[in-house]
Length: 164
Image (tube, rainbow, N blue to C red; front, side, top):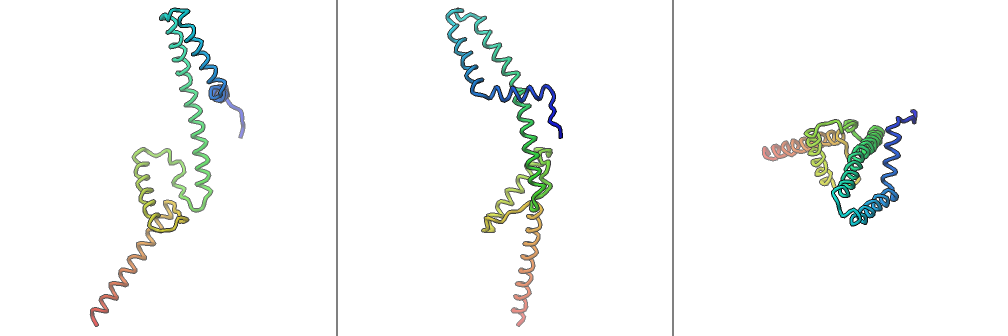
């Protein structure tokens, strides 16, 4: 994998690091302080106010794109790391890989499943017991089969006791 980045990506990385620094904050605070001190000199004119308004608007507008670029990259890296963990762990469901591509409605449906899974886990009294979606389905099926088997045994036992 090559580390060659395009010009915008290199600039965005540099700007993100630079603007997130203490020096950038101190610089911005100094600009505001100088602007405030110069207010009486310029008699708080419309031009004096326009300078700070225009400057902050331009900086804010450009920073939105830099922040979004940085967040997109970080988000993609985190998703890839999580996908690797999911794919490499034997007990996890590979259906979770690229889950971010689901619709909001599909995510809500999946969340309801995990709420139910959490409730089931609380009933198991074993904090070390974890389940993926697939394991939970298998465990649920196994538990239902066991429950049905116990009930049919109880029913058969009750019928034989009644017939005696």
